[in-house]
Amino acid sequence: MRSMLSLFGRAFADPGTYESAQPGADYLAGLLGSPGFVAVAALDAGRVVGGLAAYVLPKFEQARTEVYIYDLAVDEPFRRRGVATGLIDRLRAVAADRGAWVIYVQADRGDGPAVALYSKLGVGEEVLHFDIAPHRGVATGTAPGTSSESSGT
Image (tube, rainbow, N blue to C red; front, side, top):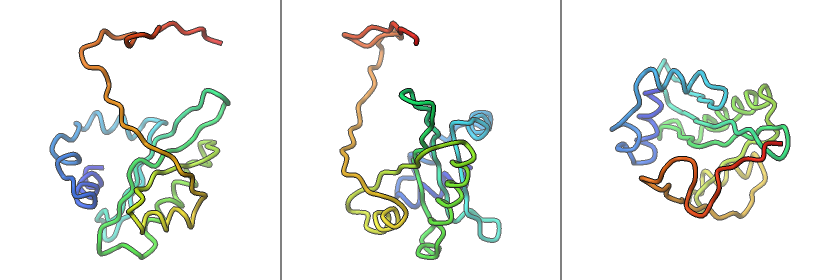
């Protein structure tokens, strides 16, 4: 997993995010052992040359799950050799085993290779993505103007 994090840092030109504050071994073991997370690595001679990190999301509107590919990267010398497709194919098998009904992924408009890969494997949708910062220092339980009550079923 640490090798995969380093790969992501190199591939996304963002080593600070992926290497400067890596979680401890217990955290990573818990994450890797959780049913809500999937990591797939492509190896060449024991070295990680491709990686995929995905989240399994239980849905509320129906008793089913979706899988979200959060990160996918392949080392430069191994690109255009089917590594990314192989990672996704392995995830497809894991998703089927977990009863997921769909896998989805986001791609930046300017990332031609990613858009081409995902277009080959699935159906594109035009969506907008927004990053919303959490409130810091707000008491847990409610956000301003909301109620934390749950009606259950």
